[in-house]
Length: 317
Ligand code: HEC
Ligand SMILES: [Cu+2]
Image 1: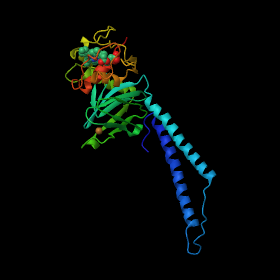
Image 2 (image 1 turned 90 degrees about the vertical axis):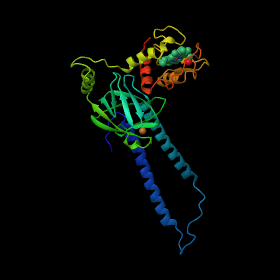
Image 3 (image 1 turned 180 degrees about the vertical axis):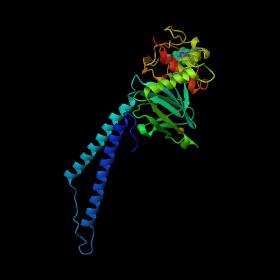
Image 4 (image 1 turned 135 degrees about the vertical axis):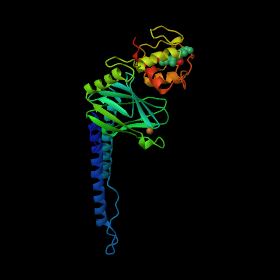
């Protein structure tokens, strides 16, 4: 077995073992029963009619059906309980943007640092990957963590984990995505929290040619980049970030809150909703407003969309 390197790995392995071993036992039972029946009831020259005609056995048939039903329901319930753990992203998780493209993985941290095919994370801290693809469907798969989720163009998916083992863990793309699909590999490097902080500080203070030793460089974090785009792309003309109503609704303090649309339906604003608001603004109209927002499809790159969303998320009441 591969190492169990995340907090959830053991849970998933237990369910896997349960399914594997119960299936194995029933497989052995079926093969044995088949052999016994062959030996006992096969047609022979000596006694061609030794097997009596069987009418069925209600008690046995019902028992088998009920036992099998319970077995399947146990697997279902157990799987559901585990699946909910995948969905329950801890609120204090460190968020990292992941962009998949043919054929590499790009990571962007909240301070603006970017890495390719190497994701460095602190051990024992919940990490939430906010993933999207720039081209086709990919899938982010970390076997040692027993975690995998598809990475889709034009939409966010998430994957959270809490790494429990130091060292490097292989990442693969698990969705066939073209010629170099099998080389679409990355590593998750798990380090102690201290080391992680030093690693980030080293970059912030010693980026070659930009800053003298010990001096902070002007790094552009996604939030800062988003703030710039908010002005340069003209969002400011229609949206305030101070609570004021302009042509469009104000955007501060809205993330995670409920929004009501003109047709009366409601939705909790999440990353995918914000993304959709930028790409297809007329799809869901905020109550009390007119369909005046232009689409930003094709105008903003995936990275810029991530930045704008990070900025909106950072705006408090
Ligand atoms: C010409 C005016 C205009 C511009 C420019 C504009 N918007 Fe909008 N926006 C609107 C209007 C009007 C609405 C409300 C109607 C709707 O839902 O489409 C809206 C809705 C939104 C919403 C949903 C708000 C909510 O309360 O749920 C978001 C998010 C948003 N805009 C973000 C942006 C961003 C980011 C930009 C710049 C990249 C931008 N908008 C540019 C007019 C504009
Ligand atoms: Cu891929």
